[in-house]
Image (cartoon, rainbow, N blue to C red; front, side, top):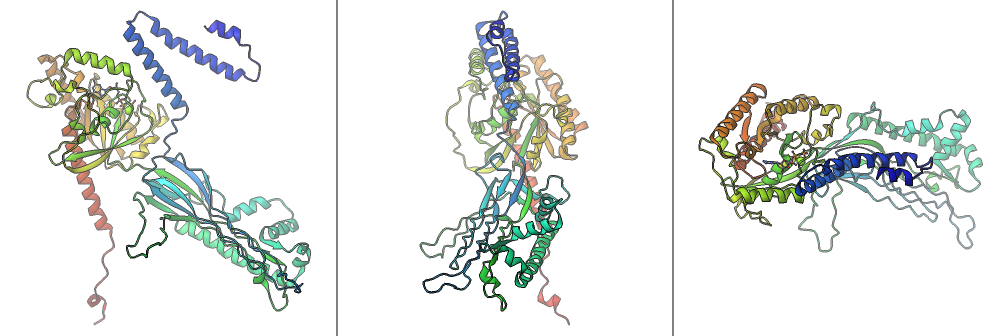
Length: 590
Ligand SMILES: Nc1nc2c(ncn2[C@@H]2O[C@H](COP(=O)(O)OP(=O)(O)OP(=O)(O)O)[C@@H](O)[C@H]2O)c(=O)[nH]1
Ligand SMILES: [Mg+2]
């Protein structure tokens, strides 16, 4: 195949790179496909082919950057520029020399930012946002139209901060931009350019205007006002930079007393950059000496700010684990399959954090616990393969039994096919959110694997849960790496971890042999001890995410962490709130 490929194509210089890439792809394909041709059964071959196909797909997705989820973005925002004022004179039949009649420019549109629950990523937000410019003024005293507000929609949980003045990525402010544009010009030309940027002249009146005292006076005033405005903007940026935590939805404020037909006022959110004032028409420059000014001002520039948007998902619990530990499987099992987080038997299936809701009833049942059957991988082959194995065995190890003293029991219901739809008739008593994340591996902080930037999404989680593959010979090694990587990302981050979920417990002692059960129990004990010595007092629970075993305990524990953290947060808010105003008796002098 390769030879024919080489023979058929004689690449021109222009597409050599493309050709080399295709050749490499063909080579890599033929190598990986070659492994299929060894003596395997038809089923195994099919399974391997499917696996390779999915592997290539993920590789491709990774190469694209997996950019469907973006949680960090620097946005350059500018309010709309004001419209220019107009230099015009009234004209009418029999009134050849009417009074000045230039209208003012419209105000530039403001830029607002608002959180919305309908977005989950920052990838649709443009990096450069400009407010709408105001319309120019026109003759016959007509003012320009104001620019409409621009509203930046961001996902709930976004933190918006203004870049400090010394940050290298900050965009120039008005002064700096003007200085840069005029750099190197001789002073006379500089002055002319500056005038050009600020004034509108009546046709053919420019040269005459600049010689007039009334213009010079107006120009001095304008520079003074402009300087104050620019200073004020700088001061604002230094003293009160934008710092917003958009974790609550802004609801429309409708009054029930509003008369019928009142226009709905959509919420606009938080102002981040105000638009510039419109320019002044020539009517504003009438003085005793100059009754017919032939100049008007241009609109002012909108405010410039550079914002950092950081999406910190508001999941109460974050799952942290190595690739293939079964995080996505757990999320699916806990949410009753409501969240379609991709599951497959190769590393880095999950590329983007996914958040799901766990709904718990008073008696501890949760939505996922009412679903029977296993959580299958995406590949149909894997599913069929597993189903066949199941039909054969009709038995699943109840992972609860590893923790309990009772001997192993087999649950036949676990093999009942999963019903479609959701059956959660019990009254919901509590709910919390849980996020599934990409796999974290050793040296993720050096950008190995998918890096560790996705941990940002978990920074605000109330608690973290380590997920390890318990069927591995030394699951504690995974824990060690996970802790180290969390600390690498942010010192102190690993203190949020509250539980170790030892997943895939069903793979241990699958025959139910007493010696194997004993071995599994010893392994769990060792894991508990290791966690206690190295991580602190963490809960350790053996579960099977795939067959939804022992998850009730996990949900109960998670619920207790979330409740405790929420309570602590409420108490903190109360402590932080300012003391109430002193009563009249206290303030009155005796
Ligand atoms: N036997 C068994 N297999 C499981 C269990 N949990 C997950 N698996 C399998 O392990 C493989 C990986 O599961 P995923 O849920 O995709 O793992 P992940 O941690 O999300 O992996 P990444 O997204 O790559 O980080 C799949 O083939 C699952 O079917 C379990 O409890 N028992
Ligand atoms: Mg996953």
